[in-house]
Image (cartoon, rainbow, N blue to C red; front, side):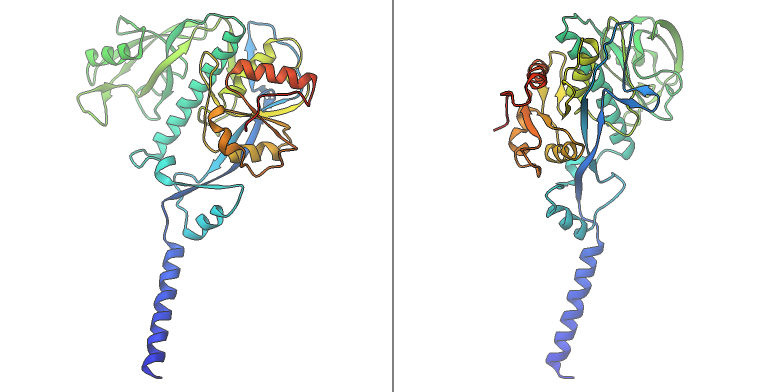
Length: 351
């Protein structure tokens, strides 16, 4: 074998090894694809997804579908061929891993953040619907999440309203933190909470924060909730998290509390965060959510104004699913009423 032939063989072998290593080594990216859609007017097993107690509800028809994306799980790392495949798939998207899963957050942190976001989203969605109906809703301080294995686990529950902590009246989340610091690490704090229609007294021994050994914690996240005039519960399950279903929850609550079918029997989907005043905010994965909605048979999709640009490039037939801009819940309600009367009605469009 000549030197040139040998050198060529060695280079080819090295290139082959390099290609194999590149194919096997993980790369810092996450793939996003269309996820399942859920009709918020439907049922989760035997329970309605939206359940109202203490107020009359009205029969309806049609569908109001929240939309989701499926992301690479935080415990899985993609290889280069998988990323390239996703990159060239028009129904999928690729994002830097740090954007979706911050490097300083554990898997449990990400899951808890999604749970907190969903609880906030559901409560604020109910508040937006009731505000649209003319209700005035006082604010309250409540439990948004309980950390697994923490002292509060099994003692406090999500949506417990905090009335007093160790004798101190609670009107803000900061007052909870201050009351716990006054108790100190390793001592017992007394919580007075309202759970449903009952007032309970719960005693919990504090522990040191993992980030600051001098700070007393019990393993809960505290935030703002609302004093609702009647009970509205959301039974969605644990597989869907985040705040992007806010608009669709609001429309579902509004539909159940008002006579007639808001959709006129149509299959409608959408996405968008929402605040108490009904303003709709942008979300992630808009193109994948539109594809998922089209696959589920939706004929109209509500798009937050901030997502209209990328929404226009979703890989769907625009003649089969209308992209309607929803700046507020009120505008979405008006669009649905017009669409129920006339499927070809002139509606706010993404352009």
